[in-house]
Length: 178
Image (cartoon, rainbow, N blue to C red; front, side):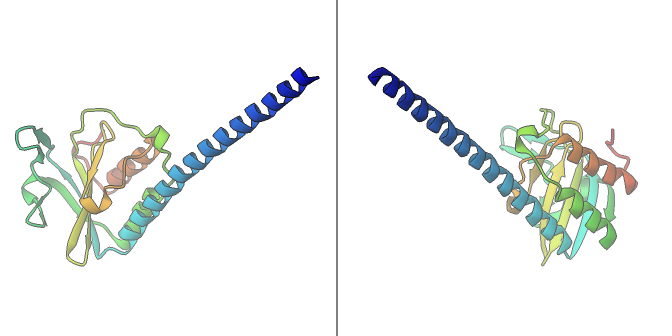
């Protein structure tokens, strides 16, 4: 009888531990999803509230290991480095809303598409109150870098990358498009 009692207590304890572990895992996953949803919505709002949005295609960047920075620089003294631009368009309010809706799509960080070439050729510049934010993107490896205020963006899933790339293409961008 004592053996059966210990056995039953062990089962209860084991199943309770599994339940707690599953709950912690569910809560952690929910927390990551909620925080990314929040980032996506903040970026969407930043786009919708911007004074203007400029999209560009540009010459590729390289990492200068001696200086520890990516060259050529996207911004020089707070302004777009015009010497690297190959195509540029200031988008309409309607196009801003389309882009904002794409950015607001859910992102599952367990499924982020990312390879290693990182040779970005397309950038979203967000002008607001004389400040410039940006998302610099590589459509080949699906990598990105951002201005400091958008550093919470860690990447996107393939379906979202394709939507962003198609958006650029729909506006007539041809340089470094697949």
